[in-house]
Length: 81
Image 1: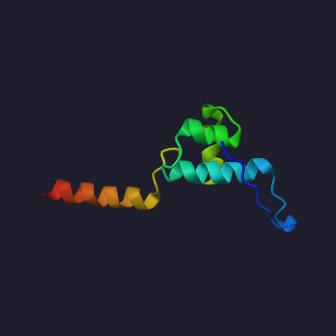
Image 2: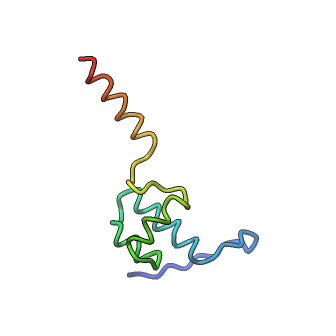
């Protein structure tokens, strides 16, 4: 695994864990990391990572609300045909 260093303004007052979760959760939600890989980035077990996703605003399913809306509209159109 590679190491990336970033500098954030001190006024943000974020902890390393929060940054790791934001990165891991984002890449997981985009489908760029598996749950196991994202958990490793965050420094958690897979189960703990999946439990934390919602607390950071990410979907456990890697499924956005826009995708859900589109799928529901497709389903409704399919039912009518």
